[in-house]
Amino acid sequence: LILWDPTKGTASGTIKAHSKWITGMAWEPMHSNASCERLVTASKDGHAKVWNTRTRRCEATMSGHLDSIEGVRWGGEGLVYTASRDRTIKVWNANEAKGRTGLLVRTLTGHGHRVNALALSCDYVCRTGPFDHRGDVPDAPSGDRSSKEWRDAAHRACLDKYRAFKGSGEPERLVSGSDDFTLMLWHPTESKKPLKRLTGHQQAVNHIAFSPDSRFLASASFDKKVKVWNGRSGDFVSTMTGHVGAVYQVAWSPDGRYLVSASKDSTAKLWEVPSGKRARETLPGHEDEVYALDWSPNGSGVATGSKDRTIKLWKH
Image 1: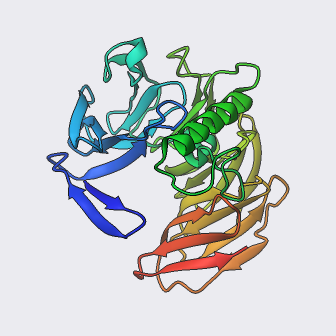
Image 2: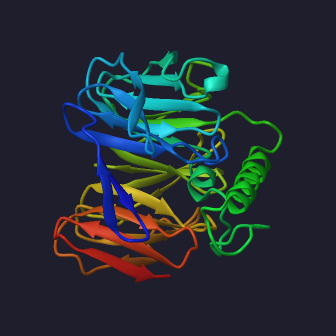
């Protein structure tokens, strides 16, 4: 695990975190902890660990999976979720006010094959933290972001934003995608029983993402399709066809109107949601499979990363 100083672009420290390779990481959301010091790592060794990046110490080791952990998420309600090749998703406590960090809360079972991907309804709110679409923090003093005044204002903005997102108190929603070709929708803070199984993909599900407002979710699969589902009920909405190779990842625009997908066919495609069943644009230029992509939170552009060892930036 390498820690970086983003302002200088230099490594500030290295931690020997796991005995096998690291398969995922997630920061603790700022509304849960204003200091933003903790993150969780997951590994092929079957363990997940919570780290304090300031002290460089491991605060908790979460053991219990019988095989490699394929994905990890840190939720908005003080819980950590891990998805494993052992076909289960485990829910762990990460809120010290509610008990020991790393305590197993419940195990979610139902998938018939390994679980590849997780997505939370609050992912976008937790990711953007206190910042608005312009990259500003409401009511925060300009200047030093390490000052107590700025951090206090940022923490208040985070809390206000998360409370507004939660609205009437709807529970956190989790979606899991598996090699059994299905997705499952859960209320993991309340129950270990799935709300719904989402069927339709003809091959393994690679990646899932909720839209920023959590009204929709999109899934990418080896069957060359992107499917869009209702983010609350799990009902099927549409299938987006056009890729001629497996689809590896999807990402939403901040306003939730568009979706981009990355594929083995060396292209990324832009789709209009929920109406577009055919791609609005194809983003060519990579010379090999496109493994990763992301849409900037301010909406200005998309980044794609390819097996051809290049990263391309696309202006929206």
